[in-house]
Each structure stands twice: as structure tokens, then as C-alpha cells.
Image (cartoon, rainbow, N blue to C red):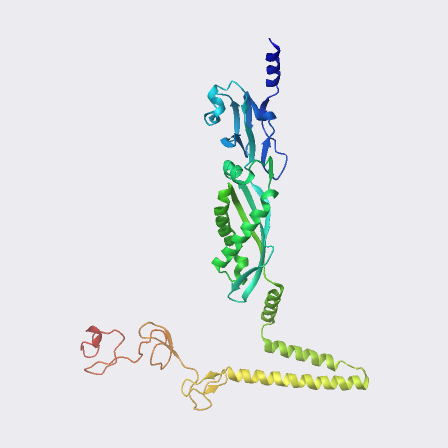
Length: 380
């Protein structure tokens, strides 16, 4: 064996024989395998693990994408050989190629949020400024497209290298989706799941061109400005008080009790009496308002229309009976006040029809008079 043959054999022994990647990180999307001189030895073994894809790039072009499995790089059974020009010579020399491993697993708990408030028009509060944040899960759906559009020749590409661009795209779609859905601010908390699903569909339309896919999208919180939240808290407090009239009387009685217990000498007694008189006036006004409110909430006489106190049996103005019986409508059966001329539900007149021959009162829908047998208008 000549010296040139020995040098050639020694060089071949330096070529890579096993191509594999053991990912020890949590955020690596792409890793370029370090091939010395970009030369891969014939019969080299390619090992692609689950949640990985191996991409061969030859002379700047993607040759093939290998899914999980074990492959032998030779001149006969590898799909890549039909796409790369080096094998048309029988693969007598080592292959020059770059090998990229793409991580296809789901990258979870990736955060997103609005750096600035989003201006929206709300039915309850007018124009409001909303802030929102949440999380999403991402994976590489098309390794070849991802390398061409995003990673390029980067030997080590991580999630942080694209995080900013993805967040801007998400916030843009979030603002657009909220404007289209027109959900009131008070109802947003009950619509987080629906908003998240709608946003995921919109975001994936944009990310598809990057070879990426959002598998999960979560809206954790959508918050209103502090002044709007303060107004909402005040409205909730007013609702929790219940009847404002009763609450005012309770506060007045409580203040009167505190004033009566003040025994701080003459000045204290005078102040206490003054406070008592003042509170007494407040209570008188409160009771007067309640009395007026009670009168305003009386019932009307069904005969003359005069307003009477609730619970009376006869009208104080005309002496008519206040309690009126109920009768069903002759057509739809709705409950009506006794003596009503028309139904409040269907508008049908409540006056009973009479026989044209004997003037006998007919039942609703009768076709013949039960008294004389004359045919009625209902039978016509």
C-alpha cells in the first residue's frame, strides 16, 4: 500500500459514522450536527429519535427530511440519494452535506401578554383599555419550511430567538379577534376558552408559513383599567346594600344610639343632644319618604282608577270593590280581570255572542244555538 493510500484511509477513518442528537435542553428548536468538513462516511448510521426530525441540506438545498428511526447512509436505499447530485457517481467518495436536527416536541408554558393597553369600544363602559396575558404551546409542524423561513443556517436556534416575533403576532391577532367578537367587558371572564380557541385558529393561519403550529392557547386574564374596576366595585357594593331606604334608617338609628351614649360633660351633652335632634330630623325625613313611597306604591281602583293603599278591600273614593275575580279568556284561556272587555294577551273581545233568533248567550265557538237550534255566525 502506497503512502497516498494510507493517508486516504486515515482520512476516511475520521469521518462521522453515527449521526444522532441527544437533546439536553428545554428550549432548542434546531441543532446543526457538527460534521467535520461536512463529509459523511459511506454506511454511516443516522439515528432519529421520537419528537425529532433530521434534515439533510446539500449545496444550500434541502435534500430530504427523516422521521424517527434508524437509517444507513449508502447509495441504494436512502431516499435522499435520489435528490442529491453526489450519488450519481456511485457514492465512491464521502458525501458533503449539512445535517440539521429539528425538535418537533411541544414547547409548553410559553408566555404572551400585551405590553400596551388595547383600546376597545364596550357597550357598558364606552371606550375601555384592556390588558391581557396568558400562555401557549408551540411545535414545529414542517421542519423543512421552518429551516427555510426562520432558522436558515443558524447552527443553534432556540425559542427565545423567535419569542418576540411570535408575541407581536399573537397580540395583533388578539386585538383583532376581540374587536370582531364584540364581547362585553363584564362577560369576558366567562368567554376565555372561546376567545382562546378563536385566537388559536387565527394565529395558526399566520404561523403556518413559518412551519410552526400553536397546539394550545390559553387566556389567563383580561383586566380593565383601575378606574373602571373601582366603578365596578362601587356598583357591586350598592347592589350588596339591598334596599337603600332601609340602610339609611339603620345608619340613622345607629348614629342616634352613639349620640345618646355620649356623656362628655355639658358641652358633650349639648353636642350629643344636637346630634340626636339632627339624626331625629333625618329619621323623620326618612320615614316621611318611606310613607310617600308606600303611597306611591298603592293599587288603583278597577272601577274609578283612584289610587288606594295596598290591602284595602273597597275604594276610598267610589266604594267599589278592590278585589276583582279572575276569569279565563274565551279564546286563549289567559287569566283576565273580571269584567274585562278585551283579552290582554290575544286582544279577543270578551263579550259573549248571542243567538240572532232567540238572543241566547252562546259559548265561544258554538256553531248552533243550544236553545233554538239556529245556525250561528261561527258555523258560516
